[in-house]
Image (tube, rainbow, N blue to C red; front, side, top):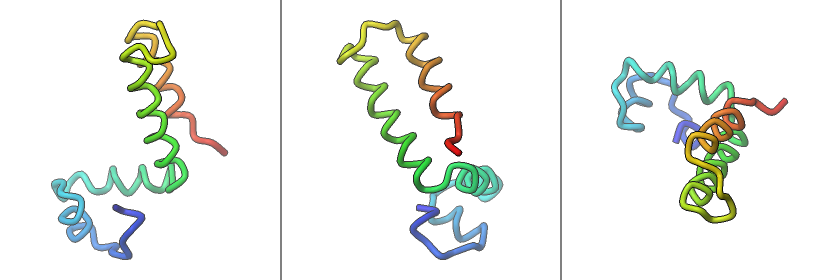
Length: 78
């Protein structure tokens, strides 16, 4: 939603996102770091790893899948 609005006022953005105003700086920083393509990539990763966690295409245990997911999500593509 941050990418879909032209609002830059922190209180307004917090209201739109439905989060407390003191947390909006974290959302804005993440939006700067990942950008829209990074957000889309991470949502797709969540989808893929959700499938893997229920046994679709993977037999790895949950801990290994979580480590792999976190690593992939935190690597910012240059």
